[in-house]
Image (cartoon, rainbow, N blue to C red; front, side, top):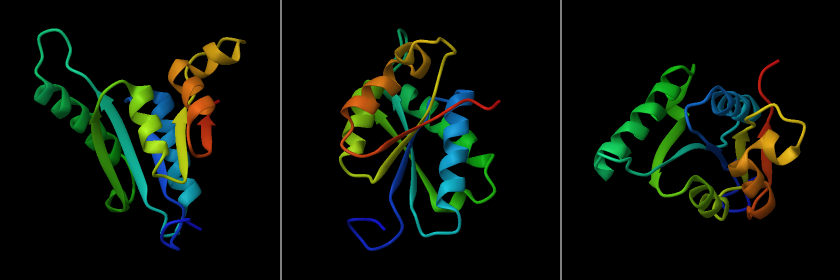
Length: 137
């Protein structure tokens, strides 16, 4: 149960458009099942070289929309694009969610390299439990 509202747990998924983040989103949807758990898909953005902040936000929102379009029931999922470094964005989100879900990048034997720097930092510093979803087999 959600510690805030008495509804299902609040789930936040860090999303960067990769296969790993798509796997994490799929896991979160499966985990929530038919419950009333809200799912928030969060993408972090910053403007690249010749790009405005608004263009970067639009690019990230389009990526999130594409991910939701692949799901069977996207209406129960909201998407949010936040400006900033992915670690900082997800750590801020961790203070207002019950569970942070992320995909694991890489194939190295070292845990840090295997999870990726964002996953590693969030697993160590988040204010809520963190699930790192492995890539599909």
